[in-house]
Image (cartoon, rainbow, N blue to C red):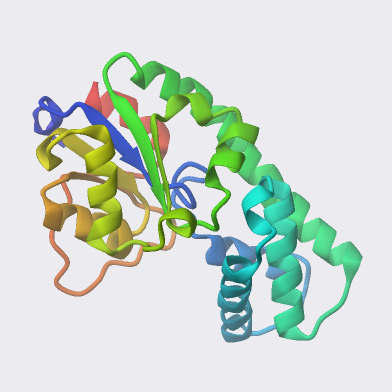
Length: 232
């Protein structure tokens, strides 16, 4: 990896789910592991269907924008169970706790990293979320690290739509070549960023998915903690 690739960059944009709250683990993959760990006898295609139905239900729920992280995940898991026709309050609570405990561990790690990067970079978050991303960042103690927060649930369009990245660039007031996007999704984060001329750092998780004929990224990391050495 060539650090000079990022010498002229002035800002870092981050994905949230799978990037700030883990090291490249998609929420769906985390739920696969949690269901398996609890011995729940659902096939992966059933869990996937329920997960995306829960996503849609959260986007449609007018109460979501005021919720913090644990309350959001609790609502999401309840919607998953509804889609599966499953009722078990104890198991629901266990899944929520285990999902959130792991995410909160990563939140605590990110505080120091973002502080170290602040002397060199401006920062922002661009996420496909549910309208409550600012609440979640505030609750996690991370809101002060970001001058730009773009939540798809607030702006009305989502990644990989170029408009959501363009909105972040407009708010930063910087050209694409001076901005780096860091995210775990090759399709939603890396490809559109690259198409716009934004520098790209892929947080390659344990279950990477790369689209056919995808353009190359500028750098690859497997832990967000590697970012500081790469760009400073």
